[in-house]
Length: 255
Image (tube, rainbow, N blue to C red; front, side, top):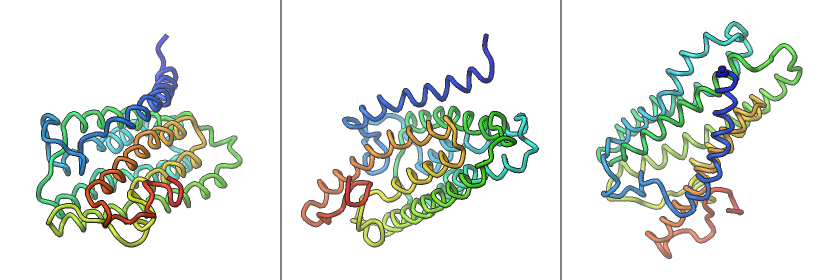
């Protein structure tokens, strides 16, 4: 018989399962947006609108579902959902606005945006339902220990992510095509924005201490780590000998 709990568990299992083919396929295929955009990628929309569209379920669906959870009056649930919403307020609203101000051109495949939209519906559903309904705060004696530890990790990752995005948008606003990012973490890795996001969702997994949080972290890694490697190879091919030799793809000194 269908139930909300069955749906919740199925989506978690589905996201974890899909992490495997996502990781494998990403070794050979790179989603054609950003520096990897191709003119034959189908119908395209503006990047700011694409980011707003595909990330928006994390806000409207979260706010829609949250009041229906049994924990909707528990202050701990509000503490826990706040970092998730904070990240997606930036990603859904602030980032597209900044992107529209810094860049005047570019294309984003509509099919990629719609795929992201569907994923974010599924992910927002399981994260929100865990925090607002299935988490048992009354018996969780380690809640504050995990929350404080996780929020520190999350905050470090979010600051890295926002800073790196700012550097990349600043380079785009200068015109003249792509340039080699310099300074800070860019001296260690080609994609500190992706490293920051991976760290963010590691912090979230620690905070929620749930299969839902783990599924989010695992899928983020399966998607962004291979893309960071593709970015690294793209920089090497484009800039050749001018690109820093000691710079790794996404994990400093290692990968």
